[in-house]
Structure formats: C-alpha cells, structure tokens
Amino acid sequence: MQRINYIAGIVIITAFVFAGIFGPFMPGVSGEQPSIENQLRPPSGEAFFGYDESGYNLFHRIIAGARIALVVGLFTTLISAFTGSLIGAVSGYFGGITDEIIMRIVDILMSFPGILLSISIIAVTQNPSYAMIIFALSITSWVPYARLVRSQTLSLVNRDFVVAARAMGAGDFYIIRRHILPNCFNSIIVQATFGVAAAIIAESALSFLGIGPQDSSSWGALIDSGTQYLLIRWHLAFFPGLFLFITVMGMNMFGDGLRDKLDPRLKM
Amino acid sequence: MRDYILRKIFISFLTVLGAVSLVFFIIHMIPGDPVENMLGEQALSVDKERIREALGLNRPLIEQYLVFLKNAAKGDLGESLYRKGTKVSELIAERFPNTFILAVSAMLVAISVSLIAGILSAIRRGTITDSLIMALSGFGISVPAFFLGPLLLLVFCRYLKWLPPPASAEGILSLVLPSVTLGFALAAFLSRLIRSQMLEVLSEDYIRTAYAKGLSKRVVILKHALSNILVVVITIAGMQFGSLLTGAIITERVFAWQGIGTLLIEAITKRDYPVVQGTIILVSFMYVVINLLTDIFYAVIDPRIRYAKD
Image (cartoon, rainbow over all chains, first blue to last red; front, top):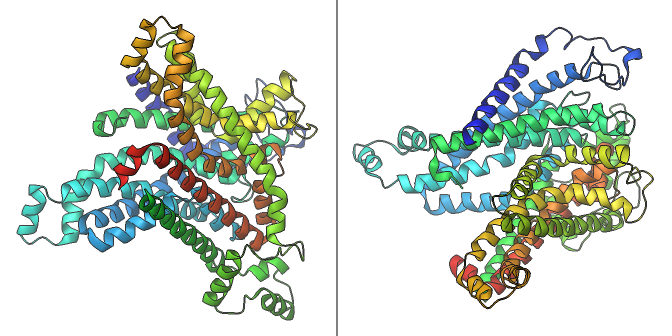
C-alpha cells in the first residue's frame, strides 16, 4: 500500500511538472481567442472540461494554472528551505543569545496565523505579482525548516567529526556549510516535499480570496470565478479544484514515501 | 503553577506585540503610496497633502507607530478611509459575531462528527467501516476548504436540493454548509486522534476489569473509555479554535457569509488600510489569546504538562 502510494505520488508529480513546464507550449493554451458562443459551455466530447465564463477552454486554463502552481510552489520552497535551514543551523550551532533571539522570533511566527501575514503583505501592493506572492509566502514558511535543522544541529555540534574539523582550524561557517547542513539534507528534502504542497495550497487560497494577480489562471482564481456560476454550471469550479486536490495529494503521498526511505526517524 | 501561567502570559504578550508591530510595519513600509492608491495618480497634490495630514502619514514612521500602539491599547483602531467617520472597531463589532457563530458551529460539527466517527472506527477496527472512515478523514485532511465548499454546494444545493442556495438561505439553514465546510478538516483530524486514543485506552487493565464486572459494551465504551479521552480531545479541539477563526476567511468567501473575513477582503479591494490593519490585528489577537487560554486550561487539568515544561 505504502509503495503504491509512493509510485502514484511520483506519477502525479511527473504529470504536474510536465504540464507546468510544457503546458503553455501546447496548441491553444497561450494566445487562444475566447469565443462568445462557447461561454460557459458544459463539458462535451470536443472539450472534456468545458469552457469558462469568457469562452476559454477550461482545460487550457487549468494547464496554464499548473505553471503558476509549479513556479510559486518551487520558488517559495527553495527560498524558505534555504533561509530556514541556514537560520536553524546558525541558531543551533552558536547557541546562547543568538539561539534565544532566533527562537523567540520563531515562537512569534508560529503563534501567528501565517495566511494573515501573507494577506497583509499582499494587501498593500497595488497589483501583486507572483514574485510578491512568493515573497509573502516565504516570510512564514521558513520556520519549520529552521526548527528542524536547529534540532538536528544541536545533536551534531558535539559529534566527533565536527569537533575534529574545529580542531583542525575550520571556521564556523565552513563547518556549517560542509558538515552540519549536508547531514541535515535528507530531512530538509522530505520537509520540502510537503512544503511545495503547502505553498501551492496557500497560493491558491490567496488567489481564491481575490487578492492575487489579476486575470490569473491560478487554480484558486479559477475556483473563485467558478463558484459564482456554481448553480448553473458545475464544471467551472469542480475541475480546477480536482486538479489542485490531486496534485496536493500526490505530493503528500510522495512525501510520506520519501520520508520512510530517507528519514525513518521522522516517521509518525 | 503560577510561574508557568505568568510565563505563558508574558510570551503571549510579546507575541501580540510582535504581531501588531509586524502588521503595522508591513502595511506602512511596503513601496507604494497609500494616498495615491486612494485618490488615484491624477489627484491634486494639495488633496494628497491634506489626506496625508489628516491620517498622520506625514509624521515620522516611529511616531506614527507609537501613536498607533497607544490607541490600539485603548481599543481604538482608527477610522475607515472609505466610510468616513466610521470607527474600525465599530465595523469589526458589527461583523465579528457572524464569524464567531460560524466558528463555534464549525467546532460543534467537528466535535460531534469526530466523536461518532472516531469511536466507531476504533471499536470496528480493521473492518470496512474503519477503512471507510479513515479514507474519508484522509480526504478531509487534505481537501482545501475552497474546494470542499463548492463541492458541498453542488451536491446539496444543486443536485439533491436539500438546502436552499446560500443567497436565499435563512436562519439555521444558512449555517449548515458553511460550518460543515469549515469544520470538516478539524473533524477529520479529531477522528484520527479519537480513534488512536480510544484504541490505546481500550487495551488498559481497567477496561478489562469493567468487562469482567459484567458491564455492557456500551457502558464500558461511553463511560469508562470515553470519559478518559475527553479531556485530551477537548483541549486539542480548543487549540484549533484559533485556526477556525482564520480558516473562516476562506469559508466566508465561498458562501458570501458577512463576517470578518469578507470585511477584510472588501477592505483590501477598496484599499481601506485602517480596516485591513484592524481586522488582521484583531484576528491575530484572538488567535493568540485562545491559544493562551487552552494552554492554561490544559496545565490546570493535567499536571504532567506544567511539570514537563518547567
């Protein structure tokens, strides 16, 4: 069962990444002209997912949305995993007052609902770009990485190879870079898989609330506009939601499998 | 005990102060001129200056911050830019009860559903009922509310027609789908918790003793087992109340529920910064206070917690 989930996860992620990278080059996905007679047309043999309210093929918009999800999910995770791990390693390695200050900041961010912070950052930008969304999401999502790496660093600092490196005159940041962080790598990767899924949901949530970039094909934005037509057309909100749900499920299944493989200690 | 509570209160105070400052500085430091956003780029510079003067935006940031903190401590969150003369606190007071009702009923849904589902899957462990409940809770944990809401609307309002569409629903009927949407993820999470707690308790000696006394299965499960896990369940549910308040922002948009979440989104679209700032600060404040109260409650009823943390 575990193995089936893991493989299903890999298949889903591959399809998603493929759609995210090559989707926009598919005929019709970019530069398609909307047609008035197709507005709100329900699914049929010719367009399996029907048409949206402006007459675009809904499937094409969903594929365009995959790229948004991929870019936001990936960059948010890269940024937050990088900064979070570095902060966590510094905090655990130096200890003392540095650790105390960093951990209080972590406490504050943890006891503060992350989505509100992202909302307040985006709220003040006139026409938010995806870069802005990535920034707004990274502000809070580095925290789990910092906690993870800090706790592992605490158990690594007194290990023989670290002491030996220090005795040979290696500098602090050299030790963090070459000895501490590589040893945390597996757990960071596992955390990052769940991080991508969480970032995709968060991006969709912001777009759903209507505070993301305008005229976006983000899955959240598609669900939002689809909800307005829900009682006359079911497909508008349903399909984007389904794609979002499957993608996120796939990532979580993959992450569970990866955790068992790479980092059995984290197994719950 | 007293030390533990005092320390908790102190940390929460720091968190609230940190959160308030963070929100204030984010809103005031992001590039872009709020006055220009309000009036449009073509506005006369005299007008801009006048508004800036009126809002205190021409004073140094640190001074604005101190004035803001002083007022916020008195419960004064400023005035709406859009509805002149209306206090932000009045707007919030008008909408907050709706959000509160929604969150409370979502909590009731979550607790009652998860008690039934969790106990059922624990006593039917390994059967098809158990697998079904666990599969459903797996779905519940990962489905985002902004997909679940539309799904429920489709099924119950459009196809089964059991409920009126949200626009024409009234009274308790209008509350059903929003509270299920908001409470579903929590119900899913709590069912798993109750199931595992129940399984653990059911293997204890005193349960065997109760059976040996000849008590019926119903009495053993509901009185002996359930009363022992209830404390943990209620506390963990309480800790989630804060996230129901923030989750309500999304659920409210699905059902056009007139709560604090829709107020926030309206304010963002109208660029009504004092309202944005006020709502975010209020929700975070509630979130922190609720977590503080559950922490204290937990420590009071379960001495292991306070000793472990001391």
